[in-house]
Length: 154
Image (tube, rainbow, N blue to C red; front, top):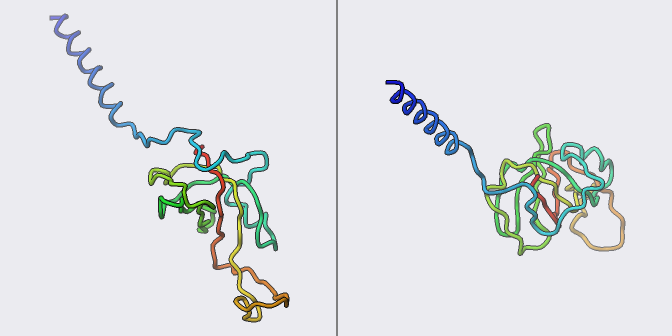
């Protein structure tokens, strides 16, 4: 009688282990995977603070840390990073030969590259050539863009 009870208990424990193993989500992207070149993490900013750090500058070279919201195109590495407060950073790799997986969505990453504010010229001459300096106003409704040279999954 007790032998059958032990076997049933052992079987139940075994089934519990098997089901919990299958229930774990495996994304196939281990921590530390690098796309492009390995980013320099010496002076890193949170994605939510990049725009404030830029101030009146239209471009800065930096390393940012944030969560990938979605991958829009795998070839060329096009994706969106959460910039907080409902804003998005549109990111893509500088070199088109980098391919990122769709499974990158939802992961926290560290990316090195150039952040740039979209702007409009105040005198309507943003497409005209010439040597005249035009006033540049950052458009607060536009998202930041980020040209990535290297990315690492955190």
